[in-house]
Image (cartoon, rainbow, N blue to C red; front, side, top):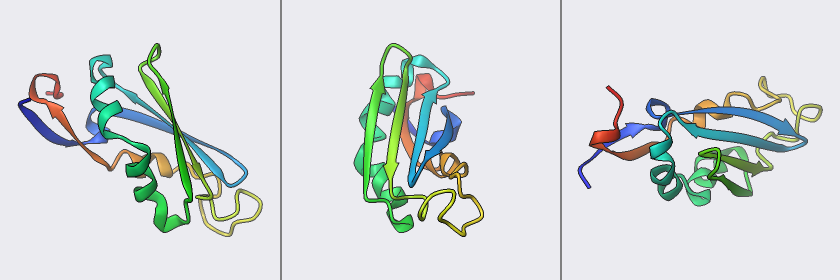
Length: 113
């Protein structure tokens, strides 16, 4: 495959939410044809490694192929959660930006621009 390495934010968007000490991160490619490419590369292990420094202990990925989307549930990443944390982003909204910093190899013919 003739591919180009890009930051995930170039080909997908994400939203974050919280429940207790868990963060939910959605991930949706702008082009639905990239869904299988992201499914192969944006793994639970890669996402856990990305958030381990924040105390994350587990990541579960839910594949939503009919929506061409993913939902990642990251456990123990909010430093105690909204009411128990002194961090400036108790809800973990900036975690979606961190997820989008990952790089992925995208087929050149599907790369934006």
